[in-house]
Every structure is written in C-alpha cells, then in structure tokens.
Image 1 (cartoon, rainbow, N blue to C red):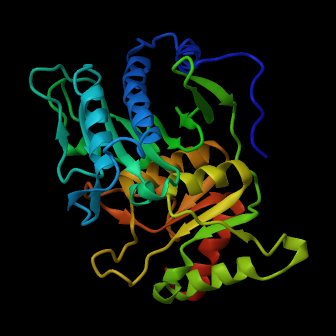
Image 2 (image 1 turned 180 degrees about the horizontal axis):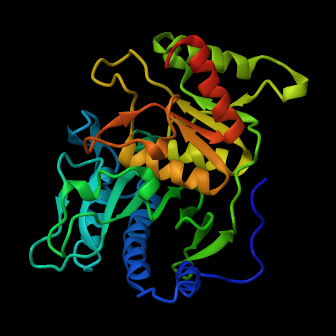
Length: 344
C-alpha cells in the first residue's frame, strides 16, 4: 500500500538540509545542485499541465539520436534542464537521452564535482493522449582529475557508483521521488505554494508483486525464457498469489511508480523486432540504472536477466539493456527462467 502522508510539513529543501546535517563535512553544494534541478522540474510541470492549451503538443518535426520522433515538450524539457544546470558550478558535464554527444558546461561558467545524466521527458509519445509522463535523473561524482571540463568517463560509470537518482512523474499531481543511498522519499508538488512537500516517507517496495507490466504485443519477438516467465505469472496458483494482474501504460516512469507503491514487476526484454536494438530498448544511463538505484534503495532489485543492472559497465552514452525491475523474488525468478531456457 502507498506510504501514508507524514504528519509534519517537510519541504524538499528542508529534507535535503536534514540529510546534509548528518554529514559534518558536507558543503551544501549537492543540495544547491538539486535545488537548481527542481527549478527546471517545476517549469516542466507547469508546461505539461497546460499542454492542451498551449502550443506545445505534437511533434517537433525531426528525430533524435535514438531515431525516435521528438515531441515539442521533449525539446522544452531538455532546454529547461540544461539552462537550469549549466551555470551553477556544480557539474563538470551532462548527458541526455536526447543528445548524441556529451553535453559540456559552457566555458564562461565554472565546473564542479558532479556529472548529471537525464531523460528529460520519458514517455513523451503519450503526451498527446494526456497519459502520465516523467523525467528521470542520475548523478555521479566526476572521475576525471582536476576541476576542468568533464569527460565521457565521468558519466560512463557503473550504476553502483551513483550518489543520487530519481524521477519526476507528471500526472494528476506532480511527484518527485529520489534517493541518495539512504532510502527513498517522495515529494508532491503543492501548486498553491510552489513547493515539493514530503508525501511518501521511506518508500519500501512490497516484497511480493501483484502486478506485471510488459508489452505483450512483442511476445513473438521475445526469447523462450521471457515468454515462459510471463505465462507463469498469468497461470492461476492460489499458494503463490497468481495470476498477477496486468497493468501496462507504456510510460516507464508511470509503470515503475505504480509498481513501486503497489507491488509489481516491470519487464522490457530484448527482442528481435528491431535489428537496431538487439540489446533491448531501454537506455542504461538514463532509464535502467537510475530506476534500478531507486528500486534497490526501496528493497527491490533490477536485472538484465543475467546481471544486476547496477553492475553493468556502459561503453557508450546510449547503450541499451533488457530490464526486469521489481521485488527481489520476482526478479530472481525471471533470471531463473532465462537460465533454464538457455537464454543467458
């Protein structure tokens, strides 16, 4: 069940400062960086909420590096995050799902100790249908020496090195969920005061799933283990709580958020549908690793069917991966089905 709302009013900034106070050598730089990011999120939320009234619906008339049609709100979100984060002196570089190459900090601005990776608007193909969409983000400490411009090695790190990750979901309300490796907390935007307020304290993923989320329209292109796993979840068995209910929105943030709160397993396996994407559809840096970080901090797990997602070493900015994410037992069972099918 969803975590009950706390009795005290705690803003996101207050929560960050309380976390910061636990570390005597903290400088406040990290908190300041996240508050810059929150400014961009509020601007995106405002634009999403009036999308049907403003000239921001529809596509922008070109494709991105992923060969996906860019929506007008994609461009807006990308621009707002970049402009909120490029000048604060906290970042050495950025990387985005929408950009082919590493995003440098403009030379007129100072650089800092962190690198930001983000998917500015996940699920943007659903914008015109008024379906919940989101922003996913992840932060690494820089690896390159000195305090000059960042390099690609600063973002091409295993997810286990992340210092912070989270997502924002723009739905009936706007909610930000994040972790700094000290549990998971959720904040709901109160538009009357313009503040994110703590609404979900210490989020824990239920230990057993009741829901599965998968695009079963692609089953013909899946491996044998993937098909058998989904069939198992659909087969009635009272002792194990099956069959699971199926819920699939097609917006990763929305599917993950629901499963995080109510108990569900999300599966997007590798498939043979698109020869350009033999390793699956989801991006390691911008989708799989950040959500895996949140899932593990909430007591769950995430795997590509063979390896823990947070152990994957990305080799390129746009590497893709299969993803199974949810309660530990359900993810472990998925890995077992793939081993038995010889899909490893």
